[in-house]
Amino acid sequence: MFSRRFLVRAAASVVGVTLVAGSLAACSAGGSSSSSGSGGKVTISFLTQNDSQSVATGKKYIAAFEKAYPNITVKMDTQPAGTQGDNLTKTKLSTGEMDDVFYYNDGSLLQALDPDKQLVDLSDQSWVKGLTKDFKQVVSTSKGLYGAPVGTSFAGGVLYNKKVYSKLGLSVPTSWAEFMSNSEKIKAQDPSVTPILQTYGDDWTAQLFVLGDFANVAKADPKWASNYTKGKEKYSNQPALAGFQHQQDTKDAGLYNKDFASVTNIQGMKLLADGNAAQYPMLTASLATVAQNEPSELNDIGFFALPADNAADTQATIWQPNAFYIPKTTTGDKLDAAKKFIAYISSSKTGCKLQQSTGVVTGPFVNSACKLSGSVPAAVTDEQKYFDSGATSSALEFLSPIKGPNLPSITVQVGSGISTAKQGAALYDQDVKKQAQQLGLPGW
Image 1: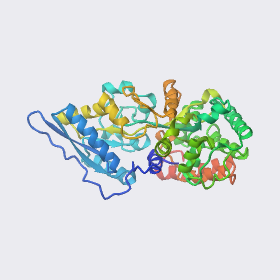
Image 2: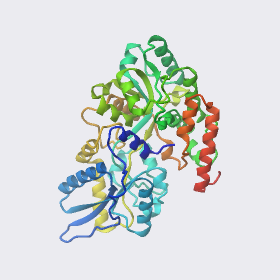
Image 3: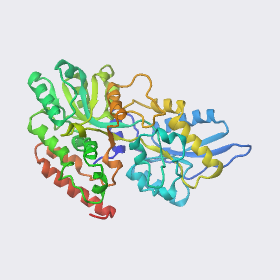
Image 4: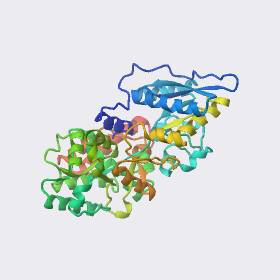
């Protein structure tokens, strides 16, 4: 399985933007270097990732905040992302050296920080009431809410060419049967257009049938993620088996491009934008590729959730934005200043604009205080409809710490016809069992 960080990195890499640090050399010293000032002035420290975009964005946040709050100074520290960043974050929290505000993941990675013991409960802050239920879930425990969202979300589902759909008189499908019917019509009515695009030149893209289907699994069984973590649910059984089965069904029906084994994600996004392919199970984060390479065709691409067998279960799977947190070692005037900094960036008019200005918008905000402004890609407008109707769920990685590393190769096997859906699901169950045992989870 791939993590949100991997997805962002993968999407970003195709447009030459490094959102996740590749170099560790730029790591600055962590720890709280903040100090209380005199005359009512307060200095706090803020820790973010050390890649160039995170640093540039952090500087913009600080400049705007210090202009609004001239008595508060924010000093920025940086550290690598990835596993090294995870380890540094845990060390700084355990030794009391964490910055006053820090940027980090949510979901299962947040839970690994033991937030009830390490972080300040922010559930009484005014901006909390505007958060989506999905985001609240991934930054909370039974004892508190700890994170403020920074940036927009993105979805995993089906990107489709609106011109092809219009030309062939197709409607957005809400059930798997409708999706297959649309695909067969495309195949029959315009053989020059690939009904369903696959791009195994980048093997991570093969996982979308499974990972993008999770919101449908959660709708069918709201306790599935919890029971999965306890070892009580398997991908070999329904409703989770459906993702693997749908991938096999589309392969068996001959709906893929002939060169599916070698085409890359960048090439696939161009084929979709040009109308040479009609539908592509993919992340909306990949819209950034089209925004850079085929900007005039960006709004030819729409989005719909991967349809469930039962239309009533069809929901959009959402990858949540990272968040700002405050450690419990931040107290007094510094705590008050840190809360103001978080509130300003996450929910003020200026803060919302800054969040949207940091890159191509590939999904809605998860805080109602922030509204997408100006022109946004048509696919994001489509995605917003699922938010407005409450038809969303976070991706599984936000709800369970279990991530099998071999899902890319397993789904390539299923999509290539090497393994059946049941064989692929069984292989993945074995894959995740190893990791669950390494994590020491009961029930495995």
